[in-house]
Image (cartoon, rainbow, N blue to C red; front, top):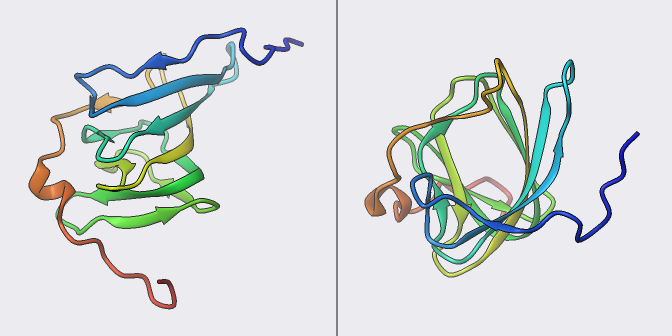
Length: 140
C-alpha cells in the first residue's frame, strides 16, 4: 500500500499544446500495472479548456466545483456543474473546460492502454468554444 500525503506531489501547470488558458493539474493516482487507472484533479480558470482529444478506454469526469462546458464534434457544448458526472466513451472526440466567465474543477479518471490515456488533437476554436450551450430540460 502507498499513501501519498497531501502536498507531497506538486501542482503543475498543464501543457500549453494540449490546453488553452490557465489550467492546473494535481495528480491523484497513476496505478502501477496490472492496474490501468489514472486520475487527475484539474482546475480550469475562466475561459480555459482542453484541446480536442479522445481516450482509448473512455473517460469519466466528476465536477468538484464551479460550472464548465463539455463539447463533442458537430454539437453545441453542454453545461456541467459541481456534482455532475460525465462519461465519455472510448474514441469519442471531445473537449472540456471552464465557462467563459466561471472557473471549474473536475476529477478526470481514465485508464491507460499500452501506456496511453489520451490522443491529443487540435485546439478548440473560439467559435466552437463560444457556441451557445445546449439546454437540458428541467435544468436552469
